[in-house]
Image (cartoon, rainbow over all chains, first blue to last red; front, side):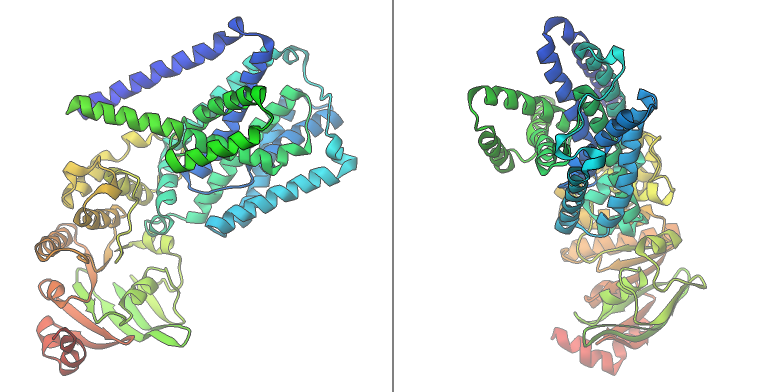
Length: 319
Length: 245
């Protein structure tokens, strides 16, 4: 009985996946370039948030500085394309690799502390990264940012770039799904629930936390690189605390205990962002209220809420 | 199997564990009793690496383990349960045990295997053996207190310990439940050939199953022997049994 239940669940997942991918694949046929550009932004935000959620939701490590690593990815790609002649593909890959290396260094310090001290360390490091970018004018062009980043011809059209990022985002999400459903992913969840107990079943807690940190950083780096090539520009804002907050809000909005949480969160976030900024300039105010409402009434986030309702409905129909 | 030599630990000015020495043979079912604050849990924490001793040595299977990390000591074959229920509350009972089994099988860091299909039989078998076979899909944090205590033992069994340290496994249980749990533990020890070391402050729990009892008081072991000997010991009666009347 259990077996058939799992199979049915898997079949449901597979159908959902195909529908979702097909939806995004045909989307450009129905909406204009402006909207496609927004959807693209949303996809990249979703990727960044999923990356952050590996450590936030799965390993229970609250980071206030994901934007720092995102910016490392973006700036690495941008600077390589600006100063060197290396192929576009390599520059794109160098972003997440560099973000991964930065995560090893940052993470090595951060995992030595827990909870609020961990969070503050991540914030401190992202501020350091922001400052380096901002002040090192000769190399990073400071707050002028880097504009007119050369990207290949075939990616200069918005629709083409949209398909390009759709493919990369899909691959990354699949990889992350693989990670969270592996023994490693389950062990991270145990670590989130009870680090001390995890240590007592023979797990080297810091090593696992560092691994989660680096994986997170790697995916944040991909998102950064992807976004910088889409915009053809980078600015110090990428490493800003506002950007970190945005990623955290997206995760919370969707629900950090659900794999699809950050994806759902980014869809809702982009909608709210564009909808509300159309009516009022007080978007941050509305955002503040949304966060308040979430934390008080919807702790599991939107996706978490839906999953919970479905589970209750299923139990009801069975009983 | 386990040899403890003159270990000591102090917190500030307080000597929590003061020059304790003892030895445990393979297959032994023994216990450490003593009133609250005697230093029993501190002693356990020294044995499992949660604390490192100020002095003395701990040898497990003739190998020195003094000052190793908890995960290192677990890997060598010492498992433990905790006095305060210490489980993974948001995970299912099944997952709770499975993560321990995965760790013991050295699969925890693998990202290519599917966790859903892994080590199911072994995990199920452990859950059955602690009486949670029919509750395995339940969220651990929602289980009844007694079930959580048994799950705790299940997690400890998941890492296939040779020596299992149980810190007040019946804490907070009703007398009948305590009795059942003690029987369960006895059965498990027999089936799996475990060496057990209990900590208890409730003497009635351990008299039935311990082959050897050590009495701790103010950081030192003041008596050691068969249950009857310990019961007859004057010092023990004075400092310990008197407390209950």
